[in-house]
Length: 225
Image 1: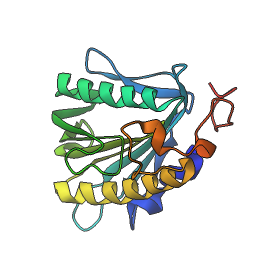
Image 2 (image 1 turned 180 degrees about the vertical axis):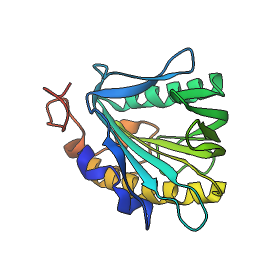
Image 3 (image 1 turned 135 degrees about the vertical axis):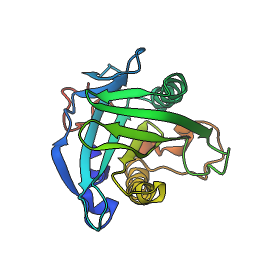
Image 4 (image 1 turned 120 degrees about the vertical axis):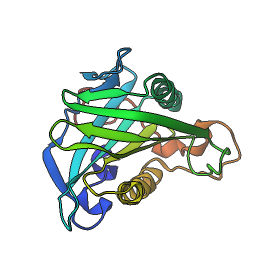
């Protein structure tokens, strides 16, 4: 399912290409440590699969290259997905500066989260937006940085972007919104999501026939784990 819904370069807009490396290890995911450093760890038992893809908008028109990424994670239950969203918001609040990898850092981060029915959120169980600046020893900076993450039942969709020389915040936001909208629409179709369901329970918005189960085969997993 992840392979069907995760964005490709065409979902971000004209000119975007695959970065090298393009895909992360589907058996691992990124975790922010207490020291505000991101690290790759094995998937926990409550996660069926997680896949990250990396993209780039090459330098052109006097502007530097832009880095983009998309991650889709499938949890065993909507509650597990809700906890991931809550942890992400808490981590962002506690780490205004984060080390992505050696030589690459996020700074001046601030986040805003809203559950279904709050702050005009009528589409997702939870929604988190993070903004700040990105810096690199090789690419320079600081440049505008944005991360959008939502939960739909047991599925978490994240899309992020780090600008380059000459890019505005709007330059970074536009391809993120484009790819994010298309990815979440695909997820809605895959799990039978119904945002109009008159219930506060994420389970109520997912059709019984389309719910993700641990027995389903997801690329990159063994036995659903």
